[in-house]
Length: 200
Ligand SMILES: NC(=O)c1ccc[n+]([C@@H]2O[C@H](COP(=O)([O-])OP(=O)(O)OC[C@H]3O[C@@H](n4cnc5c(N)ncnc54)[C@H](OP(=O)(O)O)[C@@H]3O)[C@@H](O)[C@H]2O)c1
Image (cartoon, rainbow, N blue to C red; front, top):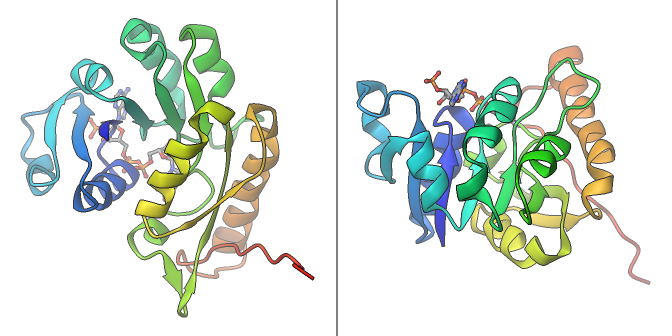
Protein backbone atom coordinates (compact mmCIF):
# COMPACT_ATOMS: atom_id res chain seq x y z
CA UNK A 1 0.00 0.00 0.00
CA UNK A 2 0.98 3.63 -0.42
CA UNK A 3 0.90 5.19 3.04
CA UNK A 4 1.25 8.89 3.81
CA UNK A 5 2.30 9.44 7.41
CA UNK A 6 1.67 12.91 8.82
CA UNK A 7 4.19 13.52 11.61
CA UNK A 8 7.44 11.59 11.94
CA UNK A 9 8.01 11.43 15.68
CA UNK A 10 7.55 8.45 17.98
CA UNK A 11 4.37 7.14 16.36
CA UNK A 12 4.96 8.15 12.74
CA UNK A 13 8.58 7.04 12.79
CA UNK A 14 7.88 3.71 14.47
CA UNK A 15 4.94 2.72 12.27
CA UNK A 16 6.66 4.00 9.12
CA UNK A 17 9.70 1.83 9.75
CA UNK A 18 7.64 -1.26 10.49
CA UNK A 19 5.32 -0.81 7.51
CA UNK A 20 8.24 -0.13 5.21
CA UNK A 21 9.87 -3.38 6.37
CA UNK A 22 6.55 -5.12 5.62
CA UNK A 23 6.75 -3.90 2.01
CA UNK A 24 4.58 -0.78 2.03
CA UNK A 25 5.55 2.44 0.29
CA UNK A 26 5.92 5.24 2.82
CA UNK A 27 6.01 9.02 2.51
CA UNK A 28 6.45 11.00 5.72
CA UNK A 29 4.87 14.46 5.81
CA UNK A 30 6.63 16.97 8.05
CA UNK A 31 7.01 20.73 8.34
CA UNK A 32 10.77 20.76 7.68
CA UNK A 33 11.53 17.86 5.32
CA UNK A 34 15.19 18.84 4.90
CA UNK A 35 15.92 18.69 8.64
CA UNK A 36 18.75 16.33 9.63
CA UNK A 37 16.60 15.00 12.47
CA UNK A 38 14.76 12.86 9.87
CA UNK A 39 17.91 11.34 8.34
CA UNK A 40 17.52 8.01 10.13
CA UNK A 41 14.01 7.70 8.65
CA UNK A 42 14.97 8.24 5.02
CA UNK A 43 15.70 4.54 4.47
CA UNK A 44 12.08 3.79 5.43
CA UNK A 45 10.49 6.36 3.13
CA UNK A 46 10.72 9.74 1.48
CA UNK A 47 10.48 12.69 3.85
CA UNK A 48 8.34 15.33 2.17
CA UNK A 49 5.96 18.16 2.93
CA UNK A 50 2.72 17.46 4.77
CA UNK A 51 0.70 18.20 1.62
CA UNK A 52 2.74 15.80 -0.53
CA UNK A 53 2.36 12.96 1.95
CA UNK A 54 -1.38 13.54 2.22
CA UNK A 55 -1.71 13.44 -1.57
CA UNK A 56 0.55 10.37 -1.91
CA UNK A 57 -1.13 7.91 0.44
CA UNK A 58 -4.06 5.67 -0.38
CA UNK A 59 -3.97 5.40 3.38
CA UNK A 60 -3.05 8.42 5.51
CA UNK A 61 -1.96 8.01 9.13
CA UNK A 62 -2.35 10.99 11.45
CA UNK A 63 0.65 10.94 13.80
CA UNK A 64 0.78 14.62 14.70
CA UNK A 65 -0.52 16.40 17.82
CA UNK A 66 -4.30 16.30 18.15
CA UNK A 67 -4.33 20.09 18.32
CA UNK A 68 -2.95 20.24 14.76
CA UNK A 69 -5.47 17.90 13.11
CA UNK A 70 -8.25 20.41 12.30
CA UNK A 71 -5.83 22.71 10.50
CA UNK A 72 -4.27 19.74 8.65
CA UNK A 73 -7.70 18.43 7.57
CA UNK A 74 -8.90 21.84 6.42
CA UNK A 75 -5.77 22.46 4.32
CA UNK A 76 -5.66 18.98 2.76
CA UNK A 77 -9.37 18.19 2.42
CA UNK A 78 -9.21 17.74 -1.34
CA UNK A 79 -6.33 15.25 -1.35
CA UNK A 80 -7.84 13.31 1.55
CA UNK A 81 -11.29 12.84 -0.02
CA UNK A 82 -12.28 9.18 -0.36
CA UNK A 83 -9.14 7.83 1.34
CA UNK A 84 -8.65 5.63 4.37
CA UNK A 85 -7.56 7.94 7.19
CA UNK A 86 -6.22 6.36 10.36
CA UNK A 87 -6.44 8.68 13.33
CA UNK A 88 -3.79 7.89 15.93
CA UNK A 89 -3.64 11.46 17.26
CA UNK A 90 -4.82 12.13 20.80
CA UNK A 91 -6.24 15.36 22.18
CA UNK A 92 -4.72 14.65 25.56
CA UNK A 93 -6.58 16.48 28.34
CA UNK A 94 -9.70 17.11 26.22
CA UNK A 95 -13.09 15.50 26.69
CA UNK A 96 -12.87 14.07 23.17
CA UNK A 97 -9.50 12.49 22.47
CA UNK A 98 -10.17 11.36 18.90
CA UNK A 99 -10.45 13.47 15.73
CA UNK A 100 -13.09 11.59 13.77
CA UNK A 101 -15.72 14.34 14.03
CA UNK A 102 -13.19 16.91 12.85
CA UNK A 103 -12.18 14.70 9.91
CA UNK A 104 -15.81 14.01 9.04
CA UNK A 105 -16.50 17.75 9.01
CA UNK A 106 -13.64 18.59 6.65
CA UNK A 107 -13.16 15.57 4.39
CA UNK A 108 -15.83 14.12 2.15
CA UNK A 109 -16.32 10.37 1.78
CA UNK A 110 -13.23 9.46 3.74
CA UNK A 111 -13.14 6.04 5.37
CA UNK A 112 -12.26 6.79 8.97
CA UNK A 113 -10.41 4.50 11.34
CA UNK A 114 -9.35 5.12 14.93
CA UNK A 115 -6.32 2.94 15.73
CA UNK A 116 -2.83 3.03 17.26
CA UNK A 117 -4.14 5.59 19.79
CA UNK A 118 -4.52 3.44 22.88
CA UNK A 119 -0.98 2.12 23.48
CA UNK A 120 2.46 3.69 23.65
CA UNK A 121 4.68 3.47 20.58
CA UNK A 122 6.97 0.95 22.32
CA UNK A 123 4.21 -1.62 21.89
CA UNK A 124 4.25 -1.07 18.12
CA UNK A 125 8.03 -1.46 17.99
CA UNK A 126 7.82 -4.65 20.08
CA UNK A 127 4.34 -6.17 19.62
CA UNK A 128 4.70 -8.95 22.18
CA UNK A 129 4.86 -8.85 25.96
CA UNK A 130 6.29 -11.91 27.70
CA UNK A 131 5.81 -13.94 24.51
CA UNK A 132 2.12 -12.95 24.20
CA UNK A 133 0.93 -11.09 21.12
CA UNK A 134 -0.55 -7.68 21.95
CA UNK A 135 -4.15 -6.99 20.91
CA UNK A 136 -4.86 -3.66 19.25
CA UNK A 137 -8.44 -2.49 19.72
CA UNK A 138 -9.66 -0.25 16.94
CA UNK A 139 -12.87 1.11 15.41
CA UNK A 140 -14.06 2.75 12.24
CA UNK A 141 -15.93 2.53 8.97
CA UNK A 142 -16.64 -1.02 7.82
CA UNK A 143 -15.31 -0.27 4.32
CA UNK A 144 -11.85 0.34 5.80
CA UNK A 145 -11.78 -2.74 8.00
CA UNK A 146 -9.73 -5.03 5.76
CA UNK A 147 -7.13 -2.33 5.17
CA UNK A 148 -6.93 -1.45 8.86
CA UNK A 149 -6.60 -5.08 9.91
CA UNK A 150 -3.85 -5.77 7.41
CA UNK A 151 -1.88 -2.76 8.64
CA UNK A 152 -2.39 -3.75 12.28
CA UNK A 153 -1.26 -7.33 11.53
CA UNK A 154 1.74 -5.99 9.62
CA UNK A 155 2.86 -4.38 12.90
CA UNK A 156 2.62 -7.81 14.54
CA UNK A 157 -0.49 -6.99 16.58
CA UNK A 158 -3.84 -8.81 16.67
CA UNK A 159 -6.65 -6.50 15.51
CA UNK A 160 -9.79 -6.37 17.65
CA UNK A 161 -12.64 -4.46 15.97
CA UNK A 162 -14.95 -2.87 18.50
CA UNK A 163 -17.41 -1.18 16.12
CA UNK A 164 -18.07 1.81 13.89
CA UNK A 165 -16.91 5.39 14.38
CA UNK A 166 -19.57 5.82 17.08
CA UNK A 167 -17.48 3.60 19.38
CA UNK A 168 -14.46 5.94 19.26
CA UNK A 169 -15.22 7.40 22.71
CA UNK A 170 -15.23 3.89 24.19
CA UNK A 171 -11.91 3.17 22.50
CA UNK A 172 -10.50 6.40 23.93
CA UNK A 173 -11.44 5.03 27.35
CA UNK A 174 -8.75 2.40 26.75
CA UNK A 175 -6.24 5.16 26.11
CA UNK A 176 -7.22 6.67 29.47
CA UNK A 177 -6.81 3.28 31.16
CA UNK A 178 -3.36 2.92 29.55
CA UNK A 179 -2.38 6.39 30.81
CA UNK A 180 -3.61 5.50 34.32
CA UNK A 181 -1.55 2.29 34.37
CA UNK A 182 1.57 3.88 32.92
CA UNK A 183 1.58 7.31 34.57
CA UNK A 184 -0.57 6.62 37.66
CA UNK A 185 0.66 3.14 38.52
CA UNK A 186 4.18 3.22 37.04
CA UNK A 187 3.70 -0.04 35.13
CA UNK A 188 6.26 0.95 32.46
CA UNK A 189 5.34 1.78 28.86
CA UNK A 190 5.57 -1.74 27.42
CA UNK A 191 2.14 -2.53 28.77
CA UNK A 192 -0.86 -3.53 26.67
CA UNK A 193 -4.27 -5.21 26.58
CA UNK A 194 -5.49 -8.74 25.71
CA UNK A 195 -9.07 -9.77 24.94
CA UNK A 196 -10.15 -13.15 26.31
CA UNK A 197 -13.23 -14.81 24.81
CA UNK A 198 -14.82 -18.08 25.92
CA UNK A 199 -15.15 -19.96 22.62
CA UNK A 200 -17.01 -22.85 24.25
N1 LIG B 1 3.89 8.67 21.87
C1 LIG B 1 3.03 7.66 21.95
O1 LIG B 1 3.35 6.59 22.49
C2 LIG B 1 1.64 7.80 21.36
C3 LIG B 1 0.79 6.69 21.37
C4 LIG B 1 -0.45 6.76 20.76
C5 LIG B 1 -0.86 7.95 20.15
N2 LIG B 1 -0.02 9.02 20.19
C6 LIG B 1 -0.45 10.26 19.53
O2 LIG B 1 0.21 10.32 18.28
C7 LIG B 1 0.52 11.66 17.96
C8 LIG B 1 2.02 11.79 17.75
O3 LIG B 1 2.68 11.45 18.97
P1 LIG B 1 4.27 11.30 19.00
O4 LIG B 1 4.60 10.76 20.33
O5 LIG B 1 4.73 10.60 17.77
O6 LIG B 1 4.69 12.83 18.97
P2 LIG B 1 6.11 13.44 18.54
O7 LIG B 1 7.17 12.43 18.75
O8 LIG B 1 6.19 14.74 19.24
O9 LIG B 1 5.93 13.67 16.97
C9 LIG B 1 4.96 14.55 16.49
C10 LIG B 1 5.20 14.82 15.03
O10 LIG B 1 4.19 15.71 14.57
C11 LIG B 1 4.81 16.82 13.90
N3 LIG B 1 4.00 18.03 14.07
C12 LIG B 1 3.85 18.77 15.19
N4 LIG B 1 3.01 19.79 14.96
C13 LIG B 1 2.66 19.69 13.65
C14 LIG B 1 1.83 20.47 12.80
N5 LIG B 1 1.20 21.55 13.26
N6 LIG B 1 1.69 20.09 11.51
C15 LIG B 1 2.34 18.98 11.05
N7 LIG B 1 3.15 18.21 11.81
C16 LIG B 1 3.29 18.58 13.09
C17 LIG B 1 6.17 16.94 14.56
O11 LIG B 1 7.01 17.61 13.67
P3 LIG B 1 8.11 18.65 14.15
O12 LIG B 1 9.32 17.80 14.35
O13 LIG B 1 8.18 19.56 12.99
O14 LIG B 1 7.62 19.32 15.40
C18 LIG B 1 6.54 15.47 14.74
O15 LIG B 1 7.05 14.94 13.52
C19 LIG B 1 -0.01 12.53 19.11
O16 LIG B 1 -1.28 13.01 18.77
C20 LIG B 1 -0.09 11.54 20.26
O17 LIG B 1 -1.08 11.90 21.20
C21 LIG B 1 1.23 8.98 20.76
